[in-house]
Amino acid sequence: MERWAARGGSVRLRCVHDVPPHLLDKVVFLRHGTKIFQYIKDRKPPYRNFTTPGAVLNIALATDNSIILQNLDFAASGSYSCEVSMETPIYTKESTAKQLTVFRKYCPN
Image (cartoon, rainbow, N blue to C red):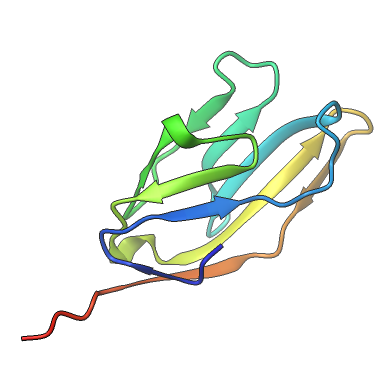
C-alpha cells in the first residue's frame, strides 16, 4: 500500500497472505479497526461494502485480497489493516497496520 496519496486520487489496498484459496473463508479490510470492506467466500454476492470516510470504494474492482479507494479526501488519511480468516482450522490473523496520508497536490501560481 502506498503511504501517500493525492487528494482526489486513488489508492489500492492489498491484503497479502499465504492462506490457500480452498482454506480462505473471509478477508476484512479495516480503517482504525473499523470494517470498511468484507469478502466472504461462498456468499452471494461475496463482497460487503461499509462506509469509508473521505473515500469511495470501487466495488466493481474489488477482489478477495485488494480494494481500490477513489476520490480521496483528507478524511481518508489513517491506519489501514486487514484480517484473514480460515475455515478449518478456525483461525483469524490481523496484518500490521499501515498509515496512509492524503495530501493536497501542489498547484503553482
